[in-house]
Amino acid sequence: MPHISYSELKDWKFCPFYHKLTRVDKIDGFKGNAYTAFGTAMHSVCEKKLLNEGDDHEQYFIDTFADCISDLDDGIEVDNRLVADMVGQGKRIIPEIEDALRDYFEEFEVLAVEMPLMEAIEGEEGRAFKGYIDAVVSTPDGKVHIFDWKTCSWGWNAQKKNDKIVTYQLTLYKHY
Image 1: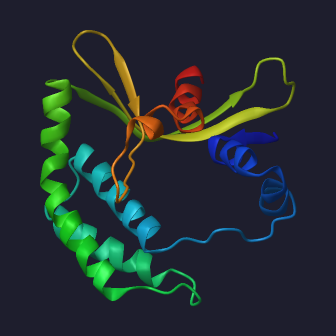
Image 2: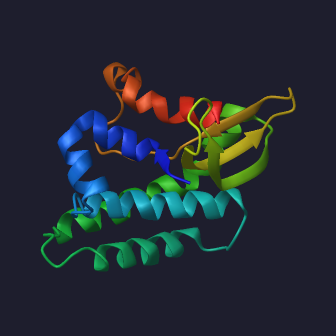
């Protein structure tokens, strides 16, 4: 079944020709860097913490981040000082993950992590929306909350928080 994902929609919004080159013609686009490696490693440790898997989340993060850095294409320059700083930042963030969730939700139950979506698009015969919801939790008030892990080096200002293409991700996940 042909599908569209949030990432594909974001690529098209960025530039329809870029979308064509990377999604239709299958020409490699952006391949990642130290920042995406950090995000992938943090995402993975957040998932482990939510599922209560493993004991040494700090070492898991360090190992996963190192693997992500080594998986970068040879042409990608890696600033070792930046990577060392990112390891330090990750080590400081990890203990805050559960506290932040408890502060925000007080009580919650994890329903899913990396929940796959492949849902038919109404009115579009044979087409589907594809995605992976990073986490789904429920709270005692009967509400279900979906969220997507994000990392950044500069914080999220009001403009970023209100950017429609950014908020579409969770809107689409909620809809489907």
